[in-house]
Length: 297
Image (cartoon, rainbow, N blue to C red; front, side, top):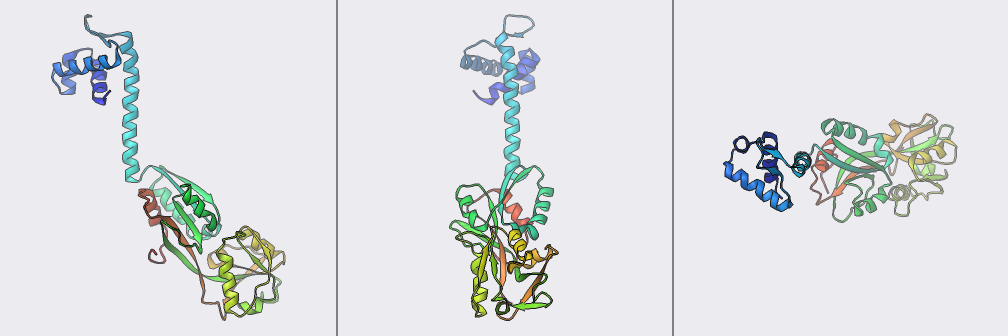
């Protein structure tokens, strides 16, 4: 059954006259008659009572008229939907993100993207950077925004933000009144690391800062996410480290201090990862809403 046959039948059902229907369809009357007969043969039922004057639909024809209109309307909607998806104005986009991205790059990007593509459904999944590998493998996300994200097979990565690391100290810590602190000065303070995950990259990055300073970290607690680590600092249980963007939106019961000495020049990065073969126009549109701190690697 072809759409042209449905269109011919619908116009005939509205006109109840072969001549007028053929004129509306810009075809010859014999061609219209052939379309209707072919449709009836395919359905195995007579749709038009040709012996009545004026022309009328059979009971089966009246039923099929209602169904045919719905079929054409759905086809038209599907066509518009396909074109909208192809143009990037309709569809869905799934983003996995580490919590620290909410302190910097993600909120303005979400706002800009939603303003430009209000009909695209955004699916947001807070997850550790290390959990995004499985999400990509299972096709649960289109883009992953993570910190110290490793290279992933079949994916491209763009660096969105590079920022200095800051120490988070309890407000009554002996070094809290200093403008800057050194890693070796904090070596005796218990260290609180996050996220708690066997493949976590950020704790390894912090450990490298201690090595560069000739110090050994005294890991006392492991937290699953950043706010828990900061809360443990506020409770006086140790020190942790965050990027500058987190410090700008930090708690009032801790202090944030830049590093001095070895390790002061090290930066932590937020990146956007996406499948290299992903042809979705929404992916590129969302990436355009994100800042770009470096060329793709």
